[in-house]
Image 1 (cartoon, rainbow, N blue to C red):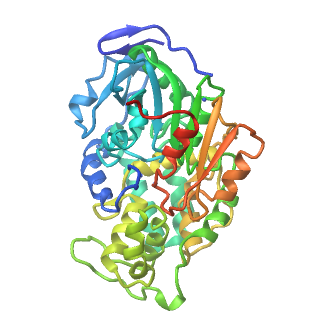
Image 2: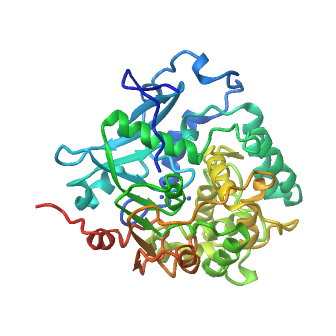
Image 3: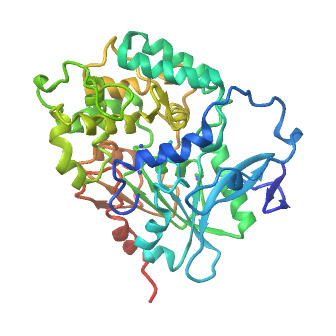
Length: 441
């Protein structure tokens, strides 16, 4: 395997032994920016990817130049495949580096919506001592075959109007988008992530010291395990090792009260600027998405969303949850979610023929997982010292399941956050102080 970086060729990379902002998390309208930036990069064009090994193909054109980003963009070529990343150097020259993983999957890290510079400025204790490394998921620049794009739309339409067909549409999606076969290049595999981190480290002359992972970042840390990292901070981490059924039950118990049945949207509600009307499916989806928005936004708008009266905001939140754009098209970021989550969590077995509750919405999102090989992730801290932030109010990564994930690890320092938003980085500074990482004067 050959590795190239900035026009140079590097030796074979050694293998290491590892739905969102700044402190306050993202605002809901960030989804609009994601669509504007991403859909121009990764829409299907009807052209199949070429057969053969990557080494048989000519060197690809620079993706940072061809598909400009709103963040610093660097790239590296592994076996003829381009991977993009951002490396924000420390205030003073150093090789000491921290991997920062905002989670996802489906997070377009270089699109500008994650505000990497804002994150760096918010935590000077990191920026003064460490380079910060952010990796872009491959789906952002991957071309989608026409059959895959059509299957995404067919699946979404089935969820909205004919849920009894959704299981078969989900299986079809997984096949046509090459998730079942493992050939699709949407999210990270454990091997890809491990080799990519190591290759960038070699090419940039980095010494990996720490890891900051929000949500799904905890799973990405297991991709590098066992590692030689000095420390790790896991912010509202995904409960590594939890199966799909357990996670579903815990999340349903924590999702914001959906309100009485009388709050349902009984008839489709057209709203200006949206190509499809708002329905009860959207209200239920929006209730799930409320778990991700910041606390101030939830306080201001949750009542109208849950009561089914704020149609415009219901539509926005529903579209953000599913990644819908156009009429029935779904962002390929959904494929990244499926590729990684299905492999690490496994399928559900109890989806009914209708979508009438928050539970049904959560179950529906996992339907394409059927038939995808389930990887049992290694549960471990992945670093010499680890600090974990949890919140009893977080309805995406339940605190009790997080505690179970790390119950057998005696080297955990716990920080409790009082913020509800899953996108919050609240508690990170407290963890850094505990780990002895303070801003340099």
